[in-house]
Image 1 (cartoon, rainbow, N blue to C red):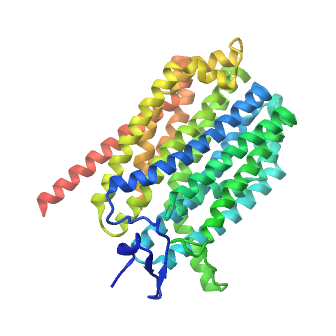
Image 2 (cartoon, helix red, strand yellow):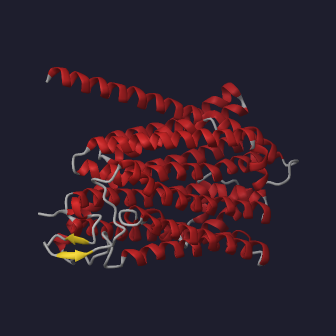
Image 3 (cartoon, helix red, strand yellow):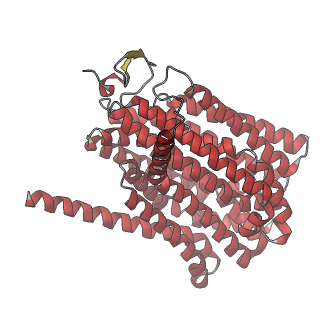
Amino acid sequence: MLDLFTLTLHPLLKNDTGKIEVMQRDSLDFKTMSVGKLFTKQLFPTIMGMIASALFTVIDGIFVGNGIGSDAIAAVNISAPIFMIVAGIGLMFGMGGGILASINLSRGKNKVANINLTQSVLALAVVSLLLVLSLTLFPRQVGTLFGSDAYLLDKVVEYLFWFSLGLPFTVLVVALPFFVRLTNPKVSMWAMLIATIVNIVLDYIFIFIFEWGLFGAAIATDISEFLGAMIMLVYLFRSSVVVQFVRLKLSWKSLRLTLRNVGYMMRIGFSVCLSEITIAIMMIAGNYVFMHYLGANGVAAYSIICYLFPIIFMMFNAIVQSAQPIISYNYGCGQMERSNKALRLSLLFASGFAVTIMLLFMYFSKGIVSLFIPDPTNMAWQYAVAGLPLFAVDYLFFGINVITIGYFTSVERIRRAVWLTVLRGILPVVFFFALPRLLDTPGIWLAVAAGDMVTTLVIVVQLAIDRRRGKELEVEN
């Protein structure tokens, strides 16, 4: 009998009822196609989408810094952990649901994969609406909690309130690509490119022409995220795609099954959500430490790193997301060598990217900082130029950690992925408060690198133990 393993590349596909139906020609054969070819097909559009998302963030920061001022950048930076937490929630349901959908597709359960998509999006809708209520009702409390002083609080509140209105679309833009890429990764790429172009145009109009300040920056982001989410939603409502929305049954049994599946999605995706939360915690801890040692200028300098760090994370995440369906699908059908080959390719690409970014940040720090703060006499500019090369040391270790944890998540090694994520979240915070006492200001900039380096060493030791245990088992057998 034909099953989904052999039919994913063909226009005819057998569904759960045994009927043959026509599917898209651009479906990918995750079982038999060369891993290198599959990885390349996933990587290019995923990276292009992430580059678009990175430009979305960077250009937003450039417009805010040049059109409103360094205080506005600092205010956005204090709000940034909220975005990281929201993105983490989107990644949790997106990756968790995407991994389940990949495994179910590999076992011929395409209807269950459709249910996974629908349940994931419904759960996101509920969670994002709760977040909107919290941020619109309590923006001052949230701003204070995340490290704002009285001087910046009004700006933080203004940005937080208007930014929060677009949160339901922000989480969808993060989550939906995990499902879209199971059929056509180019759709998510175009969704992000269009959203980025619209954001650039609206940022210019709202900030420089209308002079709407942080309100304009937030509304531009909301409109752009809405467009990106709608493009992917429309695509997933098409009847011809492999994974699509379905109507869920309205019964107590269906509700219990939905809650159970959503709970398991959260378990699978928790490590990647936790990764975003740890970045948010890193930002909050950094805001407090920089404010203590260097004041508002220090926070403004650190905000440039915080604009750039999520972009670096996006690129590493693009590599993880490119490998994830390959790893999960082949894990689902017992072809672990193909999964491991995808891991090796991911580490190779991540290491090359990390070295490139490190060199760029070390040799072109003045030009990079000037994009955000054009005045070299500004103390924030001077702090950032000195700190950027030091912080860049982190990227090599950070990339290895993100890729390895992403692999463990993709093969359902949830506990290991979670505890490694917790480790790499706690250590930078510890070093944030410890290293400045030993190294003064350079210690603040090196804190995150120190935390990620220790985590990488732990991963290397753990993998060496795994390999040794594997060899011991082979001898025993």
